[in-house]
Image 1: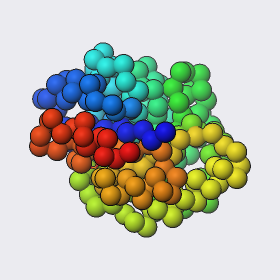
Image 2: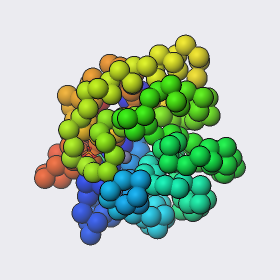
Image 3: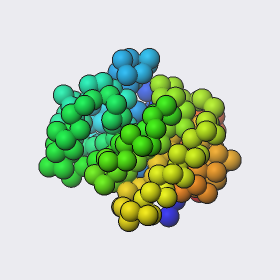
Image 4: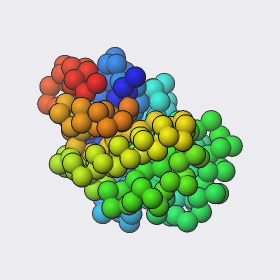
Length: 215
Ligand code: DX5
Ligand code: ZN
């Protein structure tokens, strides 16, 4: 089953509640929340307060993508804010055991995110520990960038590894996803599609159609 995760990075903050209500009525699966610290990435977005506020207005799965360094000092706050899935970039913090331990004590699903410059070989040992692997198909930091075709091989590699080792995690792709690039990712083994600028196009009545065109 192919899932779609609209990314609220593409939404005007003053309209966030209205946009979430529209998405609630579409057949979206997760709501993707990009947390950027101006340090791991050259952009600043939201903190745990945003997750807390969204938790009050939606029951949809909150898919929280941490683009922050360090990670460990903030994990508990993101859990308490009501995240359902938390992904972090492994190279952004060396305390992997502690991060996974905190997440495992909660109802949250642990996930890792893979930067385009990170090789699969360096994260293989973490795959048995996660419920989702987020593969970045742009350099993290900004919405609206062009899809990196070079990452298709990585999606395929991780998908093969998952099958060969009978592991149980979802494969999510994030960055430059539209109706054309989504298909390439699905063909290589992805089952969760994050999409911001493509879904939140100018015409609100198109959101539902945009979401369905990704599957
Ligand atoms: C980029 C973020 C993405 C971003 C995707 O660093 O991780 O989630 O919102 O935006 P689009 O779909 O516009 O590429
Ligand atoms: Zn993201």
